[in-house]
Image (cartoon, one colour):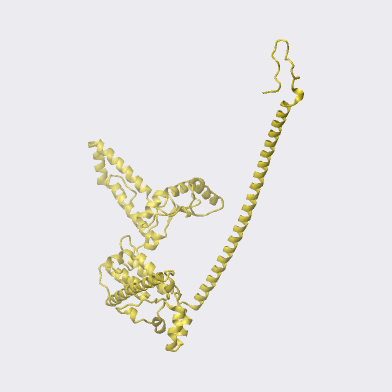
Length: 470
């Protein structure tokens, strides 16, 4: 699992998995990817440690927990175990760079234990080794206590610290030495030796048959395993130019010879030298292609067209059946037929199997991609049709939803208008009632029945009454 947004959510999820019968849990110390959260910085091993502690508290040793993240070397693996308290470690990138990373971690842990026990023995107490404590060191420790109590206390503190470090080291299985190979420590083969073993296993089990897609796959793994050796020997450009498993093997054997301080075999040296020329030709061809595309882009811009107008058509490589059809044609018909369908690909390369210009000092600007299998091309075409159909369906559905949303919005606007009209009607009615009441008040004030008689008086002592209200 990955980390959830909050640590409490991750702990609850782990508990749910445990309640559901989970037998083993691996925790990748990174959050789930989203539009606002991308992979950034090291993994959060402190949260993995929290999950490990919670699972151990609830289930004890019944459900092992593995830590994943921040492991690119054997030392990183031991650090992850120490930081999280996990029962084990998962590694992807580290194992691609060094397939023996787990064995090297076990060997390094064993070496650390030996050193710590040796230092503990030197302080006068046995560290659990076969020989126990050094008698001479024990006498020296006793003498130190009687002569210098302060130094004896410091020695005791150092002894406790060393014992804590020894107890904190993970218990890893012992690693047997690899038979028949020189090692880089811990009885394990060097990384170039592992790359050579990888190619041998591929050949033995028929995993890589030498097809167009097999060589890039093998090249990827060899490049990862032999990264440091390729940088030291400057053979990386030749590795990129390798087009067969035999050429990859020659480069890896050269890396092995360099790591062991030996001499590269003459046959391998000649193959590597040929790859140097091939790498130079491929670099020249790439430059030619860039010049061609830049020239066509300028032409398209002058004509007010998209930049890729002149090198977009004819970019799909031909199938093996189409190449066979090309080779069966008369030479005078090939150019027109080829240009109308595969104008970005080299005619000479597919018609004869080689392009003289691409292997010369001039270079070739056309593409030299190998033909694809007809079945693969048909599958790609079917997939393209399915994608197009799905896109059209999605667009149609989006338009229908948009239309429905517009209708709903219009209905909502009509409802709001009706509500506003009702409110305005209430306001108008209230205004009319107020105006009617005011008019009635004025009418009562101006009625003749309420006025005193003309010329009358208000009383004996009072002033005469007014004829009408002010």
